[in-house]
Length: 212
Ligand code: Z5A
Image 1: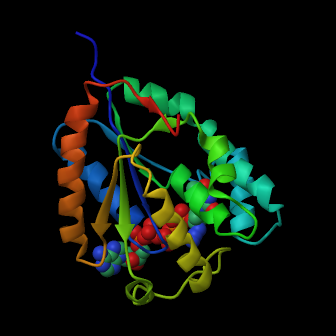
Image 2: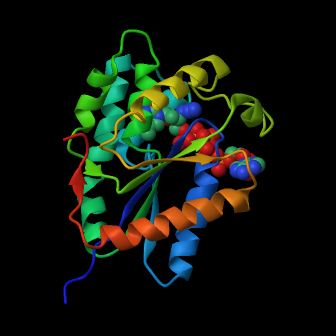
């Protein structure tokens, strides 16, 4: 019997919504249920492209806005062979930010349309489920100060949130909005329940292509 494929599950959200915390808890929960699961995150700062991005985010270097957008996309494309192989092997991938962050952050800059920003990511492996961790900026503020990286200002993050809301109008994507203002365990329970359903459904279907 051929191996059933893994599900591609993405967590998105604004700064400090709890994406990393929840990705780690979800991977543990899937593994405890006896299935394979791994975490991935974008940007993946370990590759050469990822190091260029990391230096830009840390404000150690400047890059032209179109250029850095394409680098974020290239950083996803360079991981596609690995992602496809893992999914085919039956490993469930839990991904901390994906193309939706790419579009939301660049299109929050002046002069960038959603359409232009989406184009480089057309055809990436399509997530079976995208959970958006919704968090009011005032609640996020109680989780500590913004860091020193580029984009970590409240005005920019508000525009990013609006762009995410526009992206969530797209019914070709399986979006689920999660109230991230609750306790870590309450948020985790919702994420785990939604993921369990999608893991069973995804087993029966081929991996789709994003925005195609
Ligand atoms: N970016 C881009 O421009 N283009 C792209 O294509 C991509 C990304 C993919 C990468 O940041 C930056 O790159 C990001 C988008 C841009 N810029 N910004 N802003 P990153 O991925 O390296 O880091 P991050 O995604 O910004 O991390 P984060 O948003 O700051 O954190 P988070 O993952 O959402 O949250 P967390 O680390 O799990 O939790 C934050 C704190 O809150 C921590 O102390 C937790 O213990 C606490 N926490 C978590 N959950 C709760 C609950 N439920 N209650 C109370 N406290 C909680």
